[in-house]
Image (cartoon, rainbow, N blue to C red; front, side):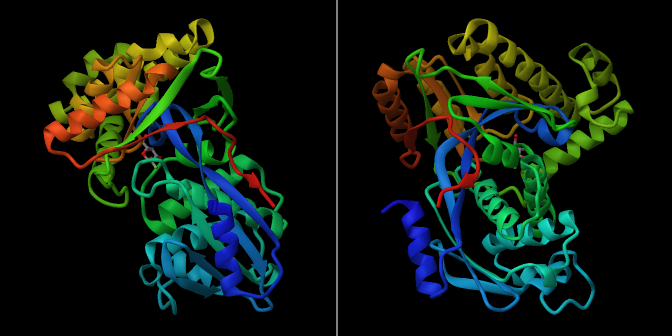
Length: 398
Ligand code: GAF
């Protein structure tokens, strides 16, 4: 059974109504450019061959009901209630906190899609949506953007919203920021929804202009391994929010709208106008933006074998300056490199989740064994290690 079959099976257990269709969107890994998105900088992520599927049937009434194979209890809301639930109207009958967190992603997308398109709730069709996924949850591979993307593409078609891919990505981010309450940027949604096979998406997070950058891994006999440390992370709390605030503080002290506007050459001055910790947070963002630009140029001029040093420098910056790595991620990177990886770094928001390693195809087993052994020697839980293929973003499957 595939996740697509699981989504259809779950839908069939909920309703006898005919299938309107199945839509899906991808998980993502980030090749480079971490925490630069909400600083209006650059990122270079790719969609992976792990997807979340949304099987959808129409309803006769004006409600939207979501169900997931991860949670036995479906969640139902009248479409007319979405706005007061998620926009936090005083006296709302259903409050944001009453909706289970996983359901706030798709229901938040439905709310944000109506807001963005200006459609009145009574003009759109009631729906049952069943989700199933093979994107690991909590692994830093953006299962959240995948559920947002599958929902957004389904609603765009079924509610005839006529929105562009980048608008649907913004709707996903709005859902995540306002309905779920996680202060994330837009990288994951763009990557999940707009990815292309064997390519990464080079995104300017200020203008939202984006270009496809060919990775050419297969032609070079290279593979990308994901090393899921099994250390769970959550972006709605704690460290992620704290790092975002430090970046905003740094930008304010430098008198710029966002750290995107600070160049590497400005760092000497930056050091003199802020405390040491804020400076290190700023230095990560400023140098990481430059590394994204350098990686894009290097991929185009010299190919994927030449980007190893940039991946490693990115990891060191996250470990030492931004301080979002954990011992498991550092062990994954060090062990992969010792076993001959071309480059490796943690990927995603940090505080757990996954690392990626760029390796020769023939070295996958060796690197996997070396990382597994290093985790055992350190007394860490066994990591899940698997290859990922840069893949297509969101679309209709059935
Ligand atoms: C998470 C967020 F959702 C992204 O927006 C991004 O900030 C990333 O962490 C760090 O690069 O995945």
